[in-house]
Image (tube, rainbow, N blue to C red; front, side, top):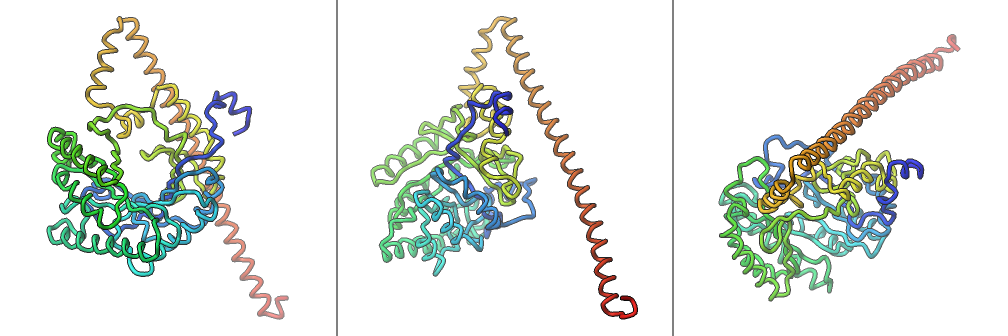
Length: 411
């Protein structure tokens, strides 16, 4: 975007010159488990054909990392399945030695030389999924036997990890647990923290299970708030007494989910496994790919600037309103409704019309983008036709040249 285009669009105040604080590289979509509570297991969830990010894509992101504080190396897959995981960690650390590198893992594949390699590569934090012994959590199979076997292997790996760190005299990577809380496992939280102390646990992230298709309503912590809240509170107190940081995600310590200012378009850069860029963890696309566009240009591209401007104005799109990070509680919705009821008829009509105009402008912009995408698709198809024609002509010329070289009379 040129300086003139930035000024004309009113975007000058929304440029972020320092780059993102957090970069998320989704290294792989492959996974060695098929957990029932994971979004991958829900009907209608699809994954692209590309399963592993290339080293070229990783290198294309490196210019963006000068001021980045954290690079997270996982998404919908198990990062330990990526063949270049250790070289990628070392490459990132060589660009910015102060950067924090981390990923989420089920930890089953961390053993032997790979275990030592992860410690020596410079990874600063490893987040291990630990959901207790239940069939909805992480397991080899959703059966009692699959759960028991998974728990046995997991804790064996964690003990090996802790022992090797001590042997090598290393503090990093720090061990963090990620606990997906459900009605059936929340009572195990304090026990998991207690056991984690024996393998060097430094922090635990606790987040409510997300019900993607309505099948987990009975497990929803918010539907079981009176039962879950005292357990969470006690577990937090226990963790803090033991020096373990207790981190709430998607809720606060009172199990509220309050609407808050979204920082993601100012701080976050997500690269999917195929190189596509997204501006937040809820999947709002930047409509660019690091394979074809400079990562620094994507960071202050029109989609990023538009989203920053929208959020600053307070008139957010529906996807933002429904986001689990900022979704209002019933109390908040009630307050909003009460504020609207205070308006007289003319004020209420103005508010409705303003929202309608905003929605219409968003729809118009989305339709325009769809038209641009369709035109780009046609251009790509034309390019493919030209390429195929050139290949056919080249093949014919090669055959003719071969014929000439083999037939002296044809020369």
